[in-house]
Image (cartoon, rainbow, N blue to C red; front, top):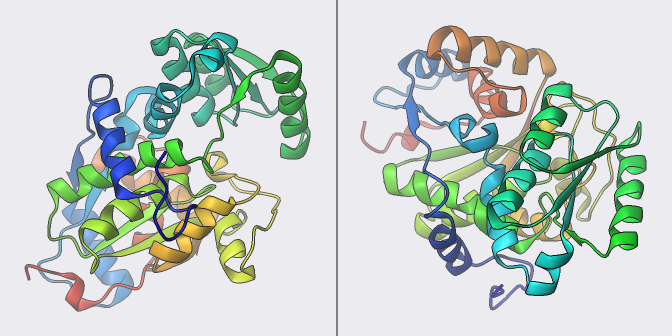
Length: 317
């Protein structure tokens, strides 16, 4: 992985472009869904005259395994050396990253182990097994699950595939941003859910390096503020996630994602679990899309008026 010339923690746009080449043979781009109904609600919630604005949702829920995660997992596994491929990989996840690693590892002919918390959603556990991974259920807390992962990793000599604070993972997730920029060259604002920060940092780098004037905001649940807390403190902060959005339940934002967030983000806003649930209902009833809480976070922030929109964000109006 080539580092940014002025900050070794920042993933350069060249790495994201390379990841697009890696992913092209195995993963399809996801569509952007336009919602006039959502745009109307956002106008009411913000009180801003957004006449002419269009709201699009990037349908990563339609990606293989149901999330954006296979992008980063595929790119990371692509860069394994032969010895690491032979030994196998290990992941820790409540569900989405585990499924993605299982899928990507099977596609690459690499054995995968996924360590998941005891309270993980059963459907996600079974899906991870279905994609071919060995699943180990351990821990009532993320700390206990993490400790068990480290025990297995060290005992078996496995390569740990970090769910967010990894350059290859971030570059893979950044291909979402490349697709957005290509489809919407005049966009004013991008809003992205945040767990540990891998997705938003990849997207923000792709967007900001292409269109510096576009603003990028992250969204975290009120009970799971790993990135917001780190930005406020100026350092990595451990949190105890408590939210219906298990996919955004990272216990911390890493050094790399924190560095990239400082460089590229315009802010992080918070949403309640009630607002997440409301956005899920809206997506189902008005857009015919079934979203998990994590996937509804950006929509929730917009519908609740949490994102500071401005009239000048409408580039064509």
